[in-house]
Image (cartoon, rainbow, N blue to C red; front, side, top):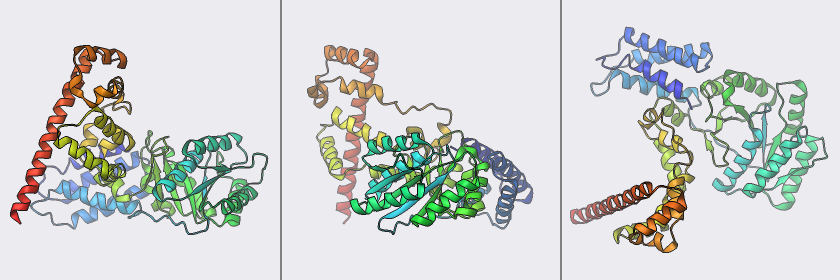
Length: 441
């Protein structure tokens, strides 16, 4: 996501590195490269020019502190202005109705149906809502079946009328069903088209008028670039939606849609989706996205994802086991599963400041832990609890059972022991630090 743009911007800022002060000449050269990078990322030329003119004006009006280099100052100005370009702050998601109603709109192939079930799962797990999905695409039977299958996977029901061709009636019946069954949220998936047309606009406008939704979300395939911005504008002129959803941000996207859709349409990006899995939906934070684009990482999102998997009781148990040197393979396997739940490994590492560039060309697969898991799962329960039992014969058996060589097994076991020692020494340091604090009081 944004890798090419990030690389181009980093190259542009190199013009200012080593410069003692900001001047009109070195800023002009940097700004020219920034503008080219934005246009290549499929940002409208006029928007790119207006944006870089403002950045230049701000940069030339700054007195550079001795502790701040010109390139650092330019990155700070760019970060602030990119944040404003993308909306400034995260937008609220308003669910006030009883039940609350969310209407999903967009072109065919934009990812509406997949997003519908992701949003239902997100609101169920993060906001403790009881959602009902409504299959309102009356032209594509496969969309109804797809939503039913997706709903079954996450335990969220789908209201549908496969024989009906009336999307307004289906939507109203779905809301009535939700009221009867005690659901407090209704998410209505609607039909998409290959292009914006009058029939489509009339139909979605009729559904909107009948259901009076709390939120209308327009789903955009971010890989379509500037075309997505133009389509969003056409929809908004007629439908007046409340927010945008950018899907497929993990694909080969140049980033233009994410950067300029709010500026052009005047509506906030509320969610971004970065994969097919149900838990790959995130609230859109303009400041965090700006930092990632500039290669500054996104440590706040990283910490939030870690906190979501944090179990305080389990953490205390692990700490006690570490103190007694009893950390075993069951504990290690638990920690691996917690990391996996946080999401795509390369995206996670990219959130750490400085890591994005370092791993740009590194192929980090989501199944990186499979070999380790296979090794641990090939052990008996007794062996997992007592790593010291693993003699040569047991190691041979575990290697064969997991599909690893004996060398790979021995290497993992050696790394595990080294990790245990390191974790134990860190615990001692923490304990010493707490004791010193106590003495200081």
